[in-house]
Amino acid sequence: MGAFQRFASESSYLERVHAISLGQGQGPVAERLITTATKNGDWVFLQNCHLAKSWLPRLEEIVKGFNEPGVKLNKDFRLYLSAMPAAYFPVSVLQSSVKVTNEPPKGLRANVRRAFAEIDAAHFENHELKLDWRRIVFSLCFFHAILQERKRFGPLGWNIKYEFNDSDRECCLLNLDLFCKGGKIPWDALTYITGMITYGGRVTDAWDQRCLDAILVRFFAPKTLDLNYKFSGSSVYYAPAGDTLKSFQDYIEDLPLIDEPIVFGMHENANLAFLRQETQSIVGTILDLQPRSSGGGGGSSDDEKVMAMAESILEKIEVTLDIEEGKRELFELDHKGREYSMTTVLKQEVERFAKLQRVIKSSLETLKKAIAGLVVMNEEMESIFIAFLNNQVPALYRKAAYPSLKPLSSWVNDLRLRLIFTKRWIELGTCKTFWISGFFYTQGFLTGLLQTHARKYDLPIDHLSFKFTVTERYRDQAAYQEILDSNDGSCPEDDEIEDPEDGALVHGIYTDAWRWDDKEMCMTESVIGIMNTPVPIFKMVPEMDFSPDKSEYICPLYKEGLRQGVLSTTGHSTNFVVQMHLPTKEKPAHWINRGAAVLCQLAD
Image (cartoon, rainbow, N blue to C red; front, side):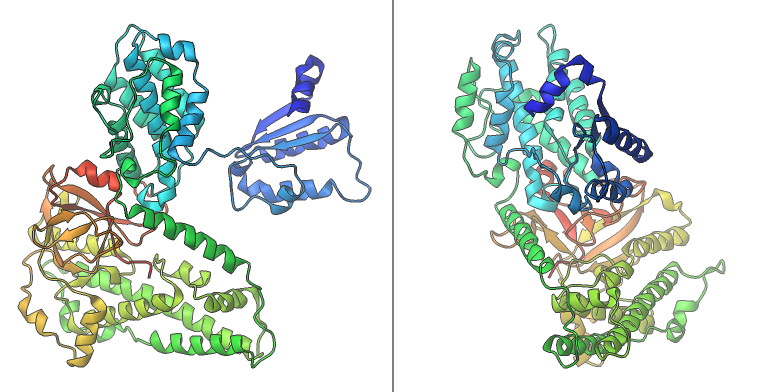
């Protein structure tokens, strides 16, 4: 760093330092700069290399070319790179570089300590707002630390891991100083700028924005100036009432080394999510380091295992879905000659599952031939072979299938249940309760329900939304299927369930960061050690311009626990299914801070 400063300090050399921020179309410009600099000894600084993913392979070739025989480089030439952590960054470039990393400190105490190490003592202590200023600054720094540290809790913290950095905090403090001239605090303006622009400008998920707003209110609002105000249910975390910067720094040094989930507004079970995430990362690294060899010659134990798994999978997914064999009522037309919406949904489900079955069957037949030595074990077959040994779903199947975090064994069993559920729908023409987790494309089912209701009552579909009512009855699809198998396809419980006049009865979802209270019929806190519990059968009824009670919690339903997906034009992830409204005795903000959601399926 000292050499860089000496080099840049001389005005004659400043003209020889070339910095460019990479992005769309900047790759060729950077390449020309490098080519020129290698000859005349200039320094080139490529910023934000992670934004030029498509150009990074070319950068790798350029760096490799520096060490090729016969290549002459000016002895003064230097190439500097800056980038955020990215899995696609070329490893060879890292290996041939002198690396300097700058990571944010881990833990609330370290994070706030770093912030207060950069604060000017005179301005902090002598501001015209006096104690209010000092406490607001501390609250903002603590808020920034909370946002960064929530990432460690995975999807409970944020659906997407946003790179909040020190510049966001500095920008907030500058805005605070600018707007507080004259001794007044314009809370509305500051809250909007902080939540929607400075930090909200990074947030791309609508549910994450809701969470950010709920956190901001806890740390940046008029109530936070109350001397008795605490940031959480714990008495440890609050804005001190000191007069000097040193007194605030002393308080920071006394903060706990290990952060309690309560300060984030989370349940103690949030630590389970953190530990599970750490374990999965370690296990994933170990599996990635396993030998990438299929074992070669026939007769090896690995070959036998994979061959047996292939046979078992082929047997389990051998469920024929033929829409032509469906019950007659499926193909009846309404009074306007239109096919029923739910029949269209069923046809689409059959097509999607049939395509997935073809992909699996074709690949497994090829894999069996490759193991037997009849065809070449190509890269695709080898990846399936290794995935089977690691009990992982091959990438080929994930690409053709629905979102799922299950390991291979559970995934295959789940797929078989989905196929049987769809086959039973074809044969019976309707279902007493729909297994919402069994749909390939869940959003299609919801649209089918809305369209059915809109056609029945001649209503505009864009004004319809679902009203949810949770019942007292539970249903587990695997157990339900066992009953059907042992009773010639009938279940006594079905006779006790009344068909809804409108909408549908749905089962098969799980809580995440909360549980359902059967006595009070509302949301309540999770049991320590238990992250997910089943939700009873619930009724979904479309209603015109429906608006839930403000005291209820608007709970997002996701297909699986990762909560991530491709961002749609609505601002929601494609992993998102629908928003449910659930009764609760707590304020909705309580569950927002908890990261409470509902999942169609679990990861095991």
